[in-house]
Length: 111
Image 1 (cartoon, rainbow, N blue to C red):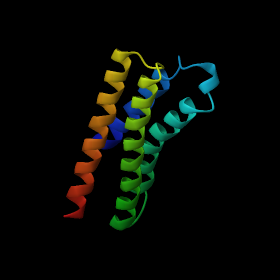
Image 2 (cartoon, rainbow, N blue to C red; image 1 turned 120 degrees about the vertical axis):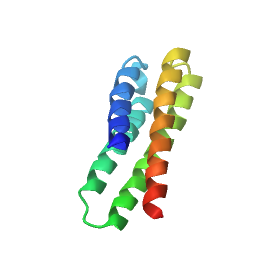
Image 3 (tube, rainbow, N blue to C red; image 1 turned 135 degrees about the horizontal axis):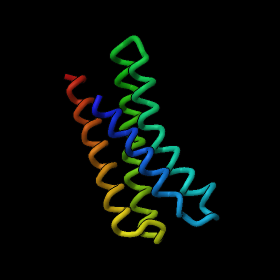
Image 4 (cartoon, helix red, strand yellow; image 1 turned 90 degrees about the vertical axis):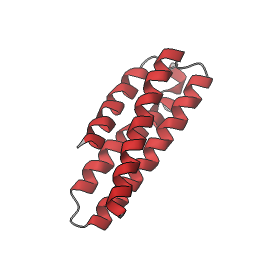
């Protein structure tokens, strides 16, 4: 499934991208960003394991919320100087694509 593949790739990229964040951010923005990124793929997987479409949609909604959270946190990290322009551009692009695909999936299932 494309949404999961994008979310999984984003989680890996976020882990790599946050590896150079300041040490004092280990339990702050670094941790928050990593958890939110992992949450996207995790909620997709958990939703797929549910036996009703309503449950599946609920977990996709949570995944979408986490994707939007990642978009904000990446912007914040960039504005704080933790992410250089090129890294921010790449990560933000991945996060936006993940959000768009998830939103499209959710909308198609609600029809």
